[in-house]
Structure formats: C-alpha cells, structure tokens
Length: 247
Image 1 (cartoon, one colour):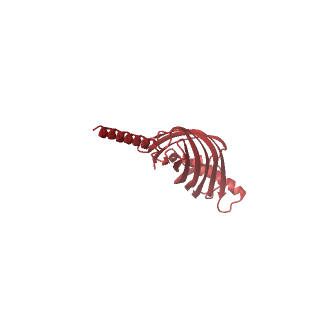
Image 2 (cartoon, rainbow, N blue to C red):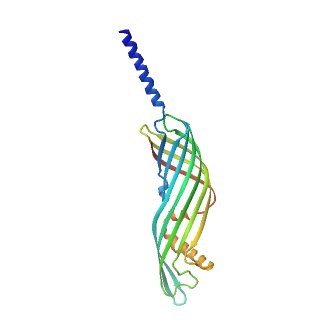
Image 3 (cartoon, rainbow, N blue to C red):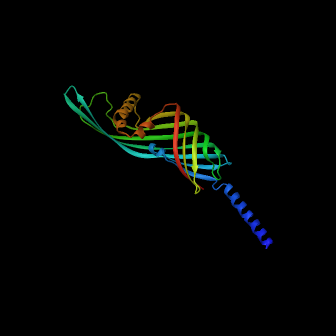
C-alpha cells in the first residue's frame, strides 16, 4: 500500500514537472503580422518576426504600394481680349505603384514563454521605391491663354526612400498566439524625387508641364498622392500598429 502511494506521488511530481517545463518552452518561434496603419497611405505591409533567443528577435517587413485614382478638374480663365470665359477641362488617371523592405532587430524587456513580448527597443533600416504614372486628357476652348501649357501631361514621378531609425514599442501576445503591438520612434530619412516627362519635351516645355501638373491635376488628387510627392530629407517620426499570429 505504501509502495503504491509513493509511486503515485512520484508520478504526480513527474507530471507536474513536465507541465511546468512545457509551459516555460517557447510556444511560437516566429510570427506573421500585418501593419494596420499603413493602409491609410496606400501601403500594404506584411512583417515576419523570428525569435533568436528569449529576448531578441529579427524582423523583416515587405510592403507593396498600388492604387489607381482619377483627377478631374475644370479651370476657368478670362480672356481679356475677347472678354470671354475660357474653359479647360482636365481628366487624368494616376497610377501609383512601388515596393519596400525594412529589416529590423529587436531587444525585449522580458519573455513570458514563446515569442518575446512586452516593451522592446529596436533598430531598423528602410528602403522604398514608389512610382506615380500620370496620363491626362484635355478639352481646351479656343482662346486659352498664350504661354500656358495646353498639351496633355504624361509623366512618371519616382520617389526613393532611404532611412534608418530607432523604435520603442510594446507587443502583447495572447495564449493562442494572437498579437497586437504599438511602436513609435525617430527616423532619419533621405527622400529623392525625379520627374520623367514622356514624349521628348524641351526644357521649357518640361517646366510648363510640371506647372500644369501642379495646377491642373494635383489639386484634385488624394492626400496619399500629395504625400508621395514630399521629398524632405532629415528627421521624421515613424509610428504604427500591427496585428499578428504566432507560427
């Protein structure tokens, strides 16, 4: 009888130890995430996070950029010679495309078993390339002001983004592997912007075509296209929210 009791106690201790050890081992060694804030800018980013040790992970983010929008505008001018209104109607298609990659290394404050969670500090690099293709059709009344660019605009605008920065964030991971995180931090970036006018325009015509784009097409475009044309180099604040699932 005593032997049976001792054996039962021994098996209970072994079972309890096994459960405790199993709970202390990582439940997920990697995570797949979706950036919830980049949708506003027309960027669709998916991130993969891999555990290196209990406090350190490596993360790689890949994003694609793509949407099409229309820009329709009617500009009215006054012809002082004929004392008549002159109308210019502009119908444009704007195609946005691009891609980007963001490698990142993170160091977490603690680990509760599984993918590290809680407060973390990370460093990252970022490269993106975006292209805006513009095609415009015009309906021009006779008497349109001399010197204005009254030809359809067709061009490619390319923006490159090269940056690096630091993030402070907090990641929460549920028992079923679902995650939610919030991050913010400074980034130093270099944005380059180039204009490629199609159709072999002269330098003077390119100046007028750029002016026509800014006056006729851009005012009716979305704010996502407007921010795409930003090319300020220097400090910037990056923030975001992601949702993910442990693998």
